[in-house]
Image (tube, rainbow, N blue to C red):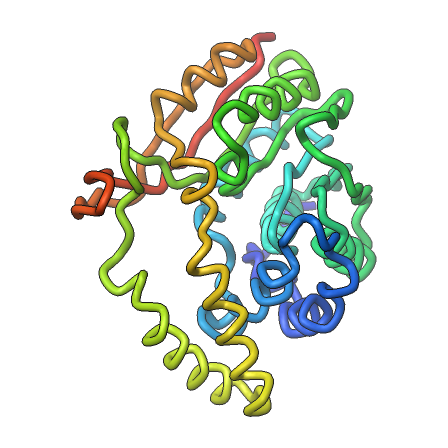
Length: 291
């Protein structure tokens, strides 16, 4: 049965425990060669102390699309990557609200978020398979939905097509990719970033205050700020390039998927950078495999 009172992702995600787990265990679980230990160690803690546990962007979009798909019989879901348990919390609460029990497969190449998702899955009693695997080579079978959040931008442009092709191969006819991602305008250059985003020392000082206010010990608050500063300075688009709508549509078309929606959620803002001016907006995307 559907929930009498709809749940939000925040209602079911024990973020304080999830954040403590990754903070303590990421250095041991993340593969040294992947360079993701700082990112995975700090991400959940940042959500906890900076955003007061706010779910990933676009959760209401995902809930609406999950409800629509569940009403049409969708049960099997592939979550393609995730920095922590935020996306799983979106999917689980969305299906709970729809009164449906899904079969969820979560895939990430790093063991830290895989373990986080296993912990959440066990706590919530989910039918969850969490796999340490690379979406460049992983294909599931019989999926009704593929869920991806800010995922493709972590791959170089010449690898993104393989990921989307694997999504398409994982879907049943009529299945859909649901995606939330920041999209840059077409053109060269770095995506626009908010004013002050690159003033890392100021951001670190603010984060230290927030972490102390959230109850972290002084040494941990300082360490969190140090770790966050590192990955703020090494954001993925500097290595992989931004993702534009034209590119995304081409990737879906090449994989045999039909784009049904690309809805932008905020007004674009432009700024000059050393490599040009590129605007960026978050978009909510639905692409479907023909029935």
